[in-house]
Amino acid sequence: MKKNLLITATLVLSLFTSCAHKMGDAIAITVYTDSIVSDISNHPVGINLNFIMDGRRFPKAKKNVTEAVKELGTKYLRYPGGEKSDLYLFGIPPYEESHTSLARTIGLDDYPGVFKDGEFVYDPLDFDEFMKVCRDVGAEPVLVVAADNYLRKPEKGERVSGREALIKHAAEWVRYANIKKKYNVRYWMIGNESWNKNNENSTVDIYAQDVIDFSKAMKAVDPSILVIPNGDSDEFFKAVITKAGDYIDRLCVSNYGIFNFNAGYESYKDTARCLIWPAQTALNAMNKYATPEQLSKWKLIVAEYGTIDWAGLWHGTNDMGHAIVNFDMTGQLLLEPQIEFSCFWNTRWLNNEEQPQTDHDAIDSNGNINPTGYSLLIWNKFMGDKMIKSESKGYIISYASYSPQKDQLFVYLINKGDREESVNIVIPGKGDAKVVQCWEYFGKDDKDLAPVWQQRDVKDKDITNMLKNQSNSSAYHCFGDSIICTVLCAIFGELFNIDYKNLIESWNYNE
Image (cartoon, rainbow, N blue to C red; front, side, top):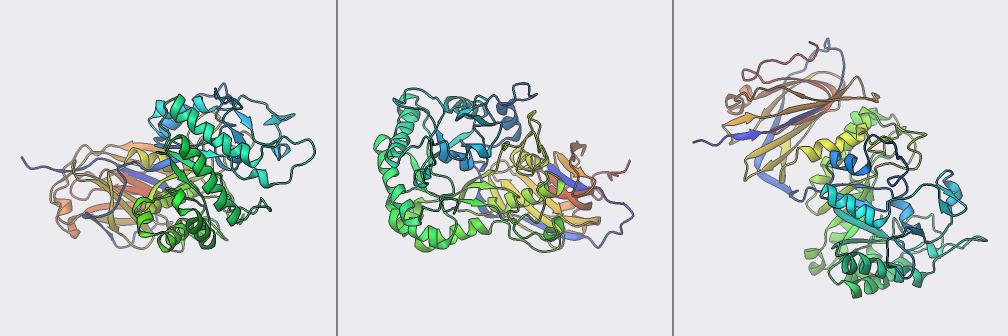
């Protein structure tokens, strides 16, 4: 019996535009199942949790954080989350239980409604609760230990943990997690964005020495853990690698590749953009300064990523445009074979209730999935074992993943333009194929706050003829700004009006 290539799911993200737009000539999309780019069998899309917001901050939410994260499908959960990691303690001496505390009370006034008199207004998500979330959703925990706030000059009346106390806390956290509780937590990051200039007393040399001393203390408890320093520039990574390279197991970086988007979404639409240049800076430094032995063991972890424009030129609204860009950024990260996994920033930040549509919140206060959250869900729901080579041009961006043992293919297409396009998908060497699913995510334009996620009926039509040559390949008519995904093919962008030419009956998105 001849085995068919299974095109399990097609995903479509789209922005509605008028069907009166004249379609251009068909754009060829070629997918090469025999050209593997990276291994993604570890399902490397994660997310940052927020210990302040993901505890009992929203007791009446329709979905709790476990349910929301399970729906997102993320397989790595970073905790306690971002800059507040450097204020967080999992417990207090004698460190016999998980009891959230603070390394110092500096900056608490910056977050009204969260703290009062140095205490939490709402019960935070403690470490044991976090581990239960990980186990309930089947995700790998990633922990950040408080490291460098001891360097900041304390204000009058502040409660502050010194350097030795923080090293002791890190070692005791390892002991509690992996010796006492048998959680087997592998990933341990030393501080959050320690390169950031918000700590004027810190230097890269101080940080490198901290990494060494933290690593020694933590690995004395459990030698199997992976110690992970952070960085941002070639200079910073060079110092950390050359000084502390013998004491670390991975590197991590924050990837906010959206800078100077002067025209907002138009800046993305009209130019070819590398959205992972911070990660590439880290990879270049790693490959330049690490020894061959270190390189054979190391991987890069993207501790945070997302569509925040720190230059403030593209307003950070959680809309269709940001979902498209984040989907594309995730795809670029997945293509890098030296990246182990990446964690989106984040579930919910501190102003989630007051500003529920900020682009960096994957879920809202009720646990519902926001547009940028759907850009994660789509990848997680439809992902093969390998990222493979695909070719496209113009406003159409393509990605593809493949599971060779199952002969199952996922193709993802993004139409970032504003007109309907006709797309032909060609898969050399695959003469037999069957479409199993097709999904779409679409909105009326890039500013749509409530795009629609739905499945379309493909009736398992045979597409053998579609794959034999380019002229008979799969034809997609797609509106601008959409995404589609099939287990052959996924398209991200505006609305793609898909027509499996001569194989599957024509779909009219306006019926």
